[in-house]
Image 1 (cartoon, one colour):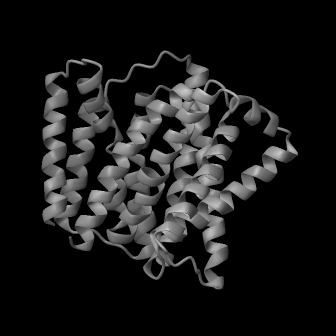
Image 2 (image 1 turned 90 degrees about the vertical axis):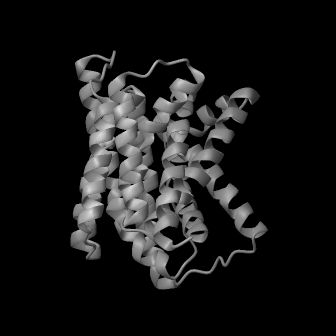
Image 3 (image 1 turned 135 degrees about the vertical axis):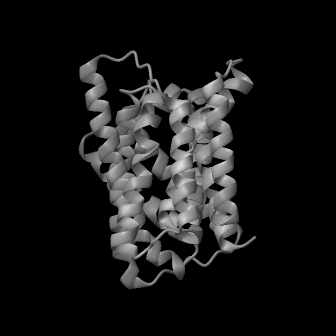
Length: 294
C-alpha cells in the first residue's frame, strides 16, 4: 500500500472509531466532568500505548530537541483540546457537534497546512474535498438539538475552541513524524498531557470523584473499552494519517464521523435513511474514490 492510500485508510478507520467513541462517551459522561474524563482517558491511553510499544519492541527514543514540541502539541491538542471537546459533548447532541466539526477541520487544516507546512492541493484533491463536504451536508442538515439556546451557544464556542487547539497541535507534530514512529509519538503525547491533567486534578481535588466512578466495575470496564478504541482507532491512526498524506486530505476523511454514525443507526437502531442521505453517501464514496486514485 502506498503512503497516500495508507494515510486515507487510516483516516477512514479513525473517523469510524470516533463515531463509536462519541456515542459511548456521551453515555458515559453522566458520572464524570469533562476534565476528569479527559484525565482518565489520557492516563489509560498512555499505559495502553506503552504496553503495545513494549510488546512490539518499538523504538521509544526521541530526539531531545523535539521533546518540547511534542509536549506543547500534547498540551494544546489533548490536555486542552480534549477537555473542551468533552465539555462541548455534554452541551450538544452528537449530530450538532458533528455539524460544527465536519467542515471546520478541513478549512483550518488547509489554511494551516498552506502557511505552516507549505502544503498545496491538486485540482482532483480539491474537487474530492468539496464533494466530501457536500455529501456530509446532506447527511447532517437540518439539525435538531433539544438543548436551550444558551447551552447550545456555549457548546458551539467550546467545540470551535477544541477544534482550533487540536488542529494547530497536528500542525506542530507533523514535521516530527518524518523521523519518528507514530506509536512512539502518540505515547509521549499521552503521557505529557496525562501529567498536566493529573497535576490539575490533584490541585483541584478532583481525584476523589474519579475514584468514586471507578468503584462501579461495569462503568469502569465500559470506559476503559471506549478509551482503548479512542487510543488505537482515534489518536494513533490520526497521526498515521497526517504522516502519510496532506493535512487537509487527512482532516477531510477524518471528518466523516457522521457517515459512520448514520451507518450504525441504520444497522443497529433500525433507522430508515432518507433519499438525501443515500445521495450523500453516494457522493462521499465517489469523493473517497477520487482521493484514493489521486
